[in-house]
Length: 259
Image 1 (tube, helix red, strand yellow):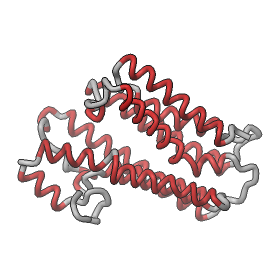
Image 2: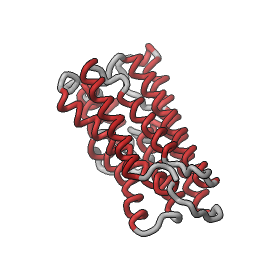
Image 3: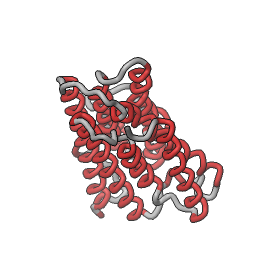
Image 4: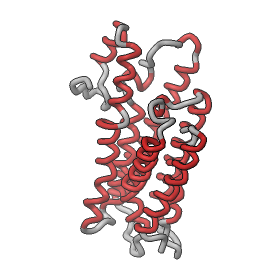
């Protein structure tokens, strides 16, 4: 079998601890997101069954690795272009605050990966079912949605004529945060695909993965921060106020009260 969960936790937080030390010494966050993505890939690889993966495990692991590789390289290219991540403006020179965000990244990686880690520990297998294909289809939809949204925003921001403007075209016309909507869908899909292979508490703890991702994005480090920043930047722009009123925060065509 691959490494047990306890050892995988150790590897996860050892990577984040080392990242924190380097980040503190160099006073930079440029490799933060890339480290998180590489941790996803490494833990997925280390959790594999040493005697050979089943087709289900191979597909599930490939989904995780593809998602992490795409997001990691995208975020790394973006921060190298911008020079910094504004989320770190108040903590770049604070070792304690940096320690917190690095450890939180370790928590995010491990909890998000739980369904896949559980699945990769299995020595028994079942024939592929509709549940597998439905889950992977949802993952593919979410992955594509996130990737397209990221590319559209990057293209919009790269156009000099859009300087000082907010993105409201493409998928951003239907959601103020379509990339986050895609990410949530992707992890719900991977939980669904693995769910019928999980037993007992594995199903409960595995379900924490999509719930944690959705909660983190919706209430903590994702949408609230970006919404506050957008209001600070575009709050006096009548077009943005109209866009904010008409465009759903997260789920396309589902306009909950504005955050």
